Length: 240
Image 1: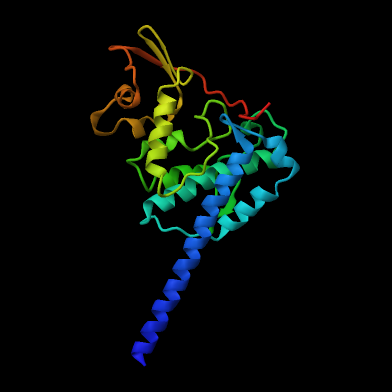
Image 2 (image 1 turned 60 degrees about the horizontal axis):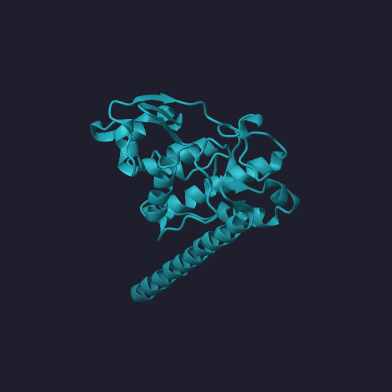
């Protein structure tokens, strides 16, 4: 009897695991298809999505009940990065046309979204689920896209557990070698306010923000550079 119960328990676990795997795999695949259709050169076709939001709604309905353990760190991170970016798009579409996500009160810190088995704000996805659980991963800042042009651009590919590390690395390098994102003029350097708001993320183990930036740059910042921050551009990252 005990042996039979153990077999049934194992079978039940396998069924749940298979269902989880199929659901999350489908979510990543459909997210990839959606982004390829509506994202081009770092901008989003909100107008087209607004005219037919069925694909986005299907994705977010699927994501409502997906549960990924943070112990499965890459799957967890990939799910929540994709989820964050999709929810930002959803928030813009629901209020479109707008000029900026900040035109919508509480866009990041008040509006709650049903995803991953919980109701949560965008800020809490970023700061509690991602930064809070993985404090040694500053590259999140280059893949979480807030719908403003000041943010590193959104890509037209889903973040996937098997490729996440290389995607994080690639997007960080692209941002930090982009002359519009890191603005160098002789010994004066202007950098995004992201480095001001989240300074502690970039200054672990006695490193400076400049050290972090130089780690990813092909052309290093000038020695003794005077570093300042340029104003964040919250203009909507919409395809014109």
